[in-house]
Length: 204
Ligand SMILES: N[C@@H](CCC(=O)N[C@@H](CS)C(=O)NCC(=O)O)C(=O)O
Image (cartoon, rainbow, N blue to C red; front, side, top):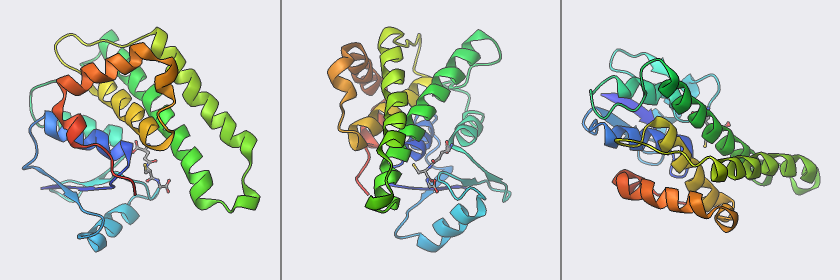
C-alpha cells in the first residue's frame, strides 16, 4: 500500500487525490488522515527534508515527493487514462501548464502564510502584492490561452483545476470576475472529472 500524507485544504495533495481516483488506484493508495493517523502522518512529513505535503512512501519503503513526482509515479501503475503524455510536444505542453499551475498555488500559499505565520507588525504588503501579481498574470494569460483536452483531461489540466480551486478557497475567487472563459473551463473540467467535486477543500 502506498501511503500519502493528507491535508484537508492543500491543492498539491488534491492533485494526488484526483490522480488516484482517475487511475482507479483507491485500493493501492492510502491517504493518512492528519487527525486519526497523526503520528504516521507527522513521521512521513518529517521524512521529507522540505517538510511539505504531499510526501509518499511506496510499498518497498521508498520515500518520494513532491506532488508532481507522486502523480507521475501513480500514472505508471495503471494504463489508462494516460495523464502524463510520452516525450514530445504534448508532454512539454502538459508539464508547462502544470508548472504554471504549481506557480500559482505556490504564490497563493505564500500570501496565506504571510497572514498565518508572520506577526502583523512584520508583514510586508509590497511582497504580498508581488505574489498576487504572479497569480493575476497567470490567470490573465490562461484566459487568453484557455487549455483544451482531446480525450480526457491530463496532469496539466488537473493541476490548473486545483490551482483555481485554491484561488476560490483562499483568495476569494476574485479571478472569476475577469476570466469568464476560465470559469467555463473549470465547469467543463468538473463535469469531466467527478473527483474534482469530491475533493473540494475543507478550510483548515
Ligand atoms: N512543490 C510542492 C509544494 C507542496 C507545498 O507547498 N505544500 C504546502 C501545503 S499546501 C506545505 O506543505 N507547506 C508547508 C511548508 O511550506 O512548510 C509539491 O508540489 O508538492
